[in-house]
Image (cartoon, rainbow, N blue to C red; front, side):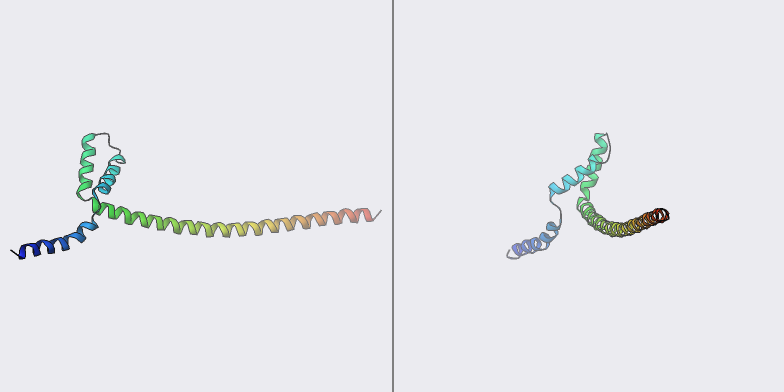
Length: 123
């Protein structure tokens, strides 16, 4: 009789960590409702089938969704950082081209002024 409570206690100790890894019912329900809403189905029967199928392995689907979400966010950050680097490079090149163009215009203006001065200096 003393072994029975020990067995229950041991079972609880081993099962509790597994239960804590599972998502709460409200999260599974919300996740599966989202799946139903975004399925695009107009049939209550199909919606219920999608929901039931989702609830059967919701924990695995949630874990995969969160893993993919983290990867997508990390990819977004990498792409955003690369876009910023590219933009800075393009902006530097654009500034250089603008500066060279302004120098050319200034040089052309100075040459025109010099030509006009040379023409009037003859008189």
